[in-house]
Image: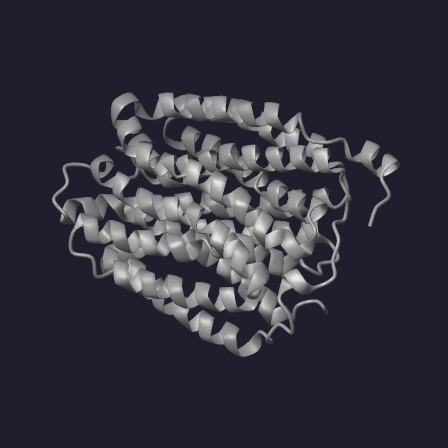
Length: 396
């Protein structure tokens, strides 16, 4: 199978931006929606968004299986149309439970992208690390767009437009993708393939355990920060900046700058040993989270920029491990299993965020995240030594 057309590659990267953007529109608009639905505070409404992240995780396993056995192109068409329609439905919600159900539908369709879109993107990539890094940049620009665009649309039109307008654009992208992406001649599971590094079964099992465990801790950090940052900025900038559109622009700036880390890390993954690079990035998260726990105003902005740079910078590693160690014929299924465990577990972050902040405040929460980052570092130490494996095992 030849490399993907440039336009198809672009749309697959746009899809990653859509995926993360749609999952965070609610977090960026929760204060406004809470006021309209007569909730006393955003913390009380926040748990209603947890279903989206639960289904985002649980849906990854069937999505990955269908991607390998039915076809990745078909699943991506379903992704674009499904998530767009779900966002339009969310814009029509009249109460918290309708909102929760519609957000759950967004999460279910969002579950398609990671186990299907990324394996499709890297299946014939010459430099998979760089490809994953660029794709990660696109995904986190979606996070930035959610912060910026949602704030602007709420200010100019209302929170419903923050779901409806991106939803319509996602459907248009789906129409374009269906038109320009050629049909697959056979499902990925029927192709010839092979892992870049052939691991012995016991070592592969250990690598899969590390992939899953680090994905859990990494997703917890990602979910707690990206869902909590809008309210964290609002609290720590009180009396300095209170315009939601301006705060959204500041947060978008943090995400946009931090996203560049994924491009840098992606290129490094193709050139240096994975384990020490990954360990360095996770260790640097710890002091920065501690600093953010007590920073105020512009000092928080600087600390948050560092925190998100290294949280985003850690994201490419799990996908890089799948590409490096897993045969393309089953990458969507392996990714789906890993993501189902990690995303479902980490969805508790969305459920707990409001009650935790209400009960103990952002400072204690950020110290807890520093502890989670330390756990990630310990798990990374269990990664196999690639140099020893290359010397002892014939590679495919």
